Amino acid sequence: MALLGATGCFAQERIYRCGNAYTNKPTEAQAKNCKLVEGGNVSVVQGTRVQAAPAGPSRPAASASGGAGQRVDAGDQRARDADARGVLEAELKRSEARLAELQKEYNNGEPEKLGPEHRNHQKYLDRVAELKSSIARTESDVAGIRRELGRGSGTTAGAASGAK
Image (cartoon, rainbow, N blue to C red; front, side, top):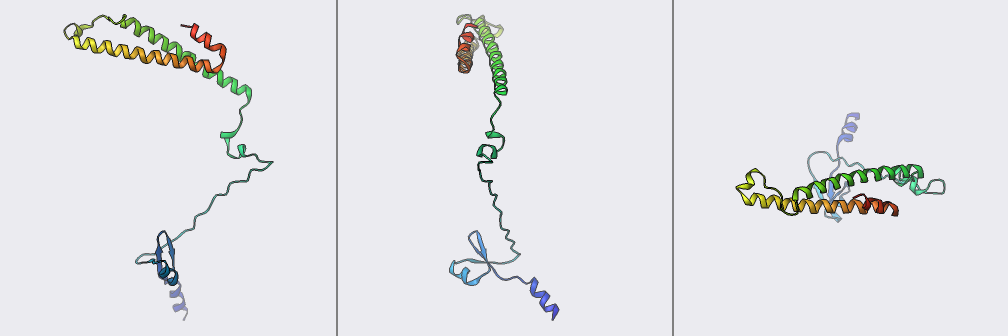
């Protein structure tokens, strides 16, 4: 008798699939037009929900989200701004040097011909067009960097434009 009871524990009921849900109740399955699942065992694990901690007077919402909402000390912010400004100024110097180099090579639209360009005029024209577009891109970069430096403070815009 104990043996029959033990085998009853291992026997599974019929399982029905109703879309993404499963049931073992034939009346519910018939009402929802569910399909019988045949072969293999079905394991359904209920998911857990993560509950957010409530934001109250002792715990403001900004600190509950972690580091993204935290304020930065004024001294630290000034240091970060100074570092960013230094990077922008260095980039401006590099871009202005590159622009001067390109303009010198462009020679007002008449750069000197290089070796194979003496025999192939189209290569020369292609290089002139590439130089012209490089100058336009670099001028745009310089203007963008100056605008960005001007956003930082009103006094730096004059200093950046006077640096040329």
